[in-house]
Length: 178
Image 1 (cartoon, rainbow, N blue to C red):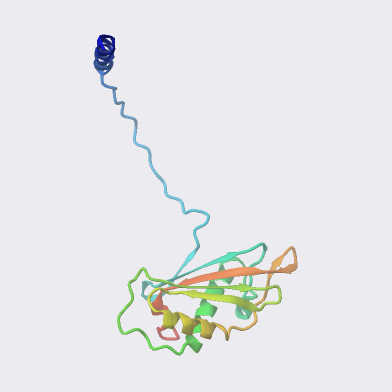
Image 2 (image 1 turned 90 degrees about the vertical axis):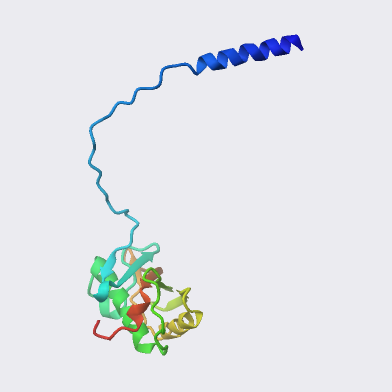
């Protein structure tokens, strides 16, 4: 017992001595300018009237993404933006829903996604909108009227592609010219 208490006393003394070191010195360096660059995975955003937005993303193993027939002559980001606008136009023309009586929160988005197979058929339509399940179902019904798309291509051969679009709810009920 006496040995144990001596050992504890010795360790306590060493611990106290170990903490009596000089505080570290802080050296200030010259301020560096920070730059912000968008992540490569960030989807491009298209400004809409009234500061509304829509975004798009395409995934799959292809060189050229699928396209709405009205956008087939375009390439790159203009083609993707055209597709997003055409899908929105198609939804708006077929949507048989009444605009919500209360304005949705600005950050809320309606996510629409579907596959376009190698024949240009729109498959696996999904709509995610937390604000109103009934409206989401009506948007799915409206999307069944989409025309046959131009399929994605990989090295000149037809390929399957996945399209995702996000829309502010107010875009669905705006005036057709907006």
